[in-house]
Image (cartoon, rainbow, N blue to C red; front, side):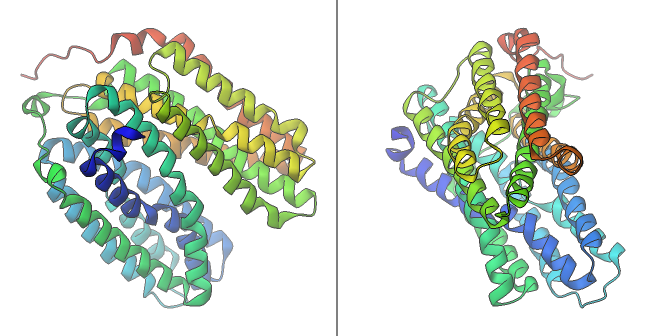
Amino acid sequence: MNAISSTPGARRLLFISIVARLPLTMLSIGLLVHAEHISGSFAAAGVVAAAYAVSLGVGGPLLGALVDRRGQTVVLVASALVAALVLVALALLPAGTPLPLLVGLTLLAGLATPPVGACVRALFPELLEDADVRAAYAVDASVVELTWISGPPLALGLGVLWSTGGALIVAALVVLLGTAAFAAQPVSRAWRPRPLARQRRGGALQAPAIRTLVVALVAVGTLFGAVEVGVAAATEAGGSSAAAGPLLGIWGAGSLLGGLLAARAGGGAQSAAGLTLVLGALAAGHFALVPAAGSVLAMAAVLLLAGAAIAPAYASIYAMVERAAPEGTVTEAFAWLATAAAIGASLGAAAAGALAESAGAEASFLLAAGAGVVATLVLMLRAGTLASGAPAVQPAA
């Protein structure tokens, strides 16, 4: 934490990136309620929300690869402008708009969402000493939880006080202004792709280490999606469905605290063995939700403790990317991690929903713990790929 606090450029960059990333958490729920308002159908709204999640996952690596070839400034500003215009268009659609048009615009909005998170992580090594970069990743993984705590309530509040379309317009303005402010920072404008980036084929996924981290994060994302559904199912079954939101907020607060502690301790695990232990703790902590499912207070305590492993896990993974990614693909690599987590969360939510309906919330929490075990096993079995780092890739002919 001290590294970022004592470096004005890094502190300013992180703050602006958090503002620019806030709309992502607003849109996850904002598009859902806006689509339901326009279409009058929760089923249609679910299709729109799924379309946004899929396009966001596809667009991140594509834009990240473009950043690695062209630099940050043009890609960020252009994508932010397109995303903002599409969001405004969505906001102005009248009731009864055909579902294909809703889905098509939503897909475009997701594809054009600027990869600010990947870009800021690629810039930390430019601003900080090597020993401080790990702590910076831990701080980033921690404070980004603030967007998940504040984004959904902000979108819903604007929808109630103004309109669902108004919430999208606010999100569009924040996307455009926040991303432009980030792209205007000197370190972002000065960042240039490495000369060898144009000679690589296969992108970031050609590196075995990056593939290992991506697979692990799919499993970690599955844990997240299953826990969110499990908490909602458990509170509904107990007649206290209003507690689901605060419980998930406590979960995020646990991650925030864990990440800040990891930053003070040097930034999380520094080896595959260390990351394996962190992921093991993540799995064990969430397994404790199974016996706690019948009590809101018990779930709150477990979520606070289990959440403390989330940000350290992310920070440890982020710190490995710089070494593991093939030269000239670091932004794309960070974007792939975000995509992997999003895919896993979607799979986890879908599977947990079916399990909760047939076997109760405890089954959803078992799925979450099992996904954590899978992530741990992936690291155990493929630890050698992380130790070796990025492969030596021959220039393309």
